[in-house]
Length: 113
Image 1 (cartoon, one colour):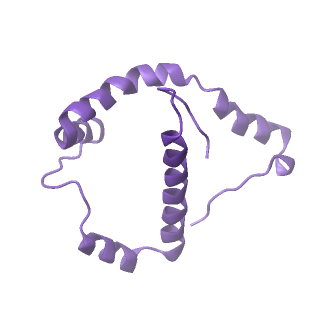
Image 2 (tube, rainbow, N blue to C red; image 1 turned 120 degrees about the vertical axis):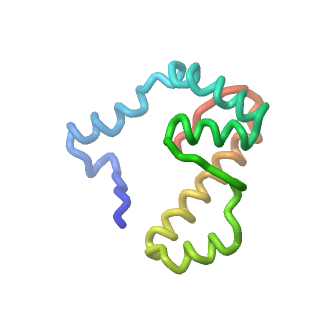
């Protein structure tokens, strides 16, 4: 597995424009779509998550949504160690993001990690 890491000084002009243009996305139009989904999940929990999994991904989920210890053990045995490390790095970024979120008072905000 390879994860791209860019530094501004290593990018060509075209690469810099392509990568930095992502920051110009209008998140307000996305928020208008996502907010009702979040509210539905807040009100209806796992049942709402199952409905959205089927509606958006075509996945029919039966049973619990939480992974078991056996699920984790099997995954660790079968995953490439680089994938495992990438997942750990991602999880750490999520923790950092939500620690910062808990310190904020605004209802909506975005943080790039």
